[in-house]
Image (cartoon, rainbow, N blue to C red; front, side, top):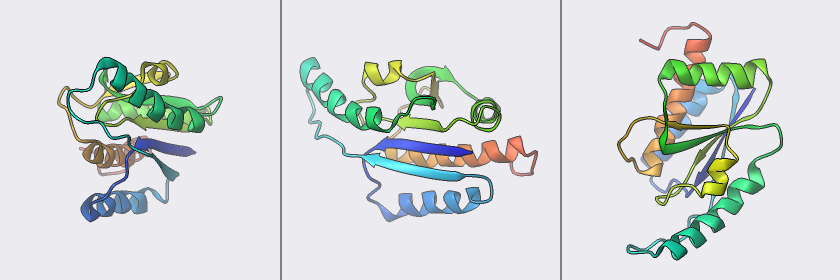
Amino acid sequence: MKIRILAIGKLKEKYWRDAIAEYEKRLHPYLKLEILEGGEEEAPENLSDREKNTILAKEGRFFSSKMKEGDYNIALDLYGEMVSSEGLAQLIEKNAMERGKTVNFLIGSSLGLAEEVKGRCQKRVAFGKATFPHQLIRVFLVEQIYRSMKIIRREPYHK
């Protein structure tokens, strides 16, 4: 089973990297987690729609280059379907374990994801209606992947 996180931007702060490393270590017995980072374009305030779309298109090329035929792609999207921990576990179990697909989670920049990229995803999910920085949502996602593995294996952790 393979799960990949495709994310725009690098984790610069050590505490974010340490949190990710802890969950990667916990996930090691269950799966190989791969995190691929794309370059973040500069996005000053007060962008026109055209400027925003240009930036999203540039960032979208990163995602397009990593999404392969047969992958199951999940966009993290504020307007996506609200998903519980159990629901996420079911998505992972159904697509990665039963169907043997690589599951890609896509995390955009502060501007989100290009519509073309979201259109290539089989699912759009939201972990709530609040807006989170992409560094934090990456840590949150890795924890939820770990929680999903514990739920799937019916092991203690999820309460």
